[in-house]
Image (cartoon, rainbow, N blue to C red; front, top):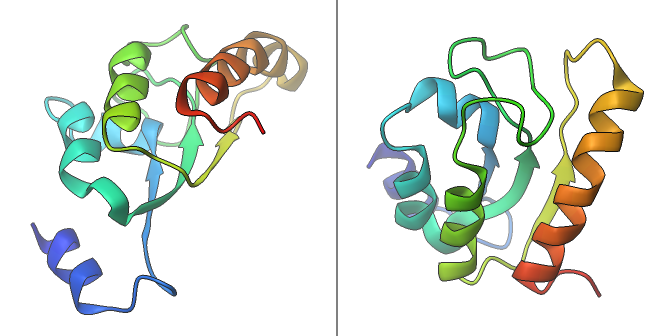
Length: 117
């Protein structure tokens, strides 16, 4: 609620939410999917990765952690997300592996959200 009030009190041209899937999974383990529905158009950017839902600074390859990736993507589709999204590889010790695994999931997500222009 605080984040919604903050966003709504500022000019949306200059302020919005960066939704980091890993961090939301750790910080809101029972509500991270609903959080993106609740925040809606206030979300301007997505850091996209998976998570063990305990370690905020280790981002897992998409589909290799405990997050409901499909649920997250479905919620973004429901709110009509049209911002930017990046594959977040922070802290993962094998950059080629996380990219090899994550890029196909990212491409599929971009298609589903209509961001594959």
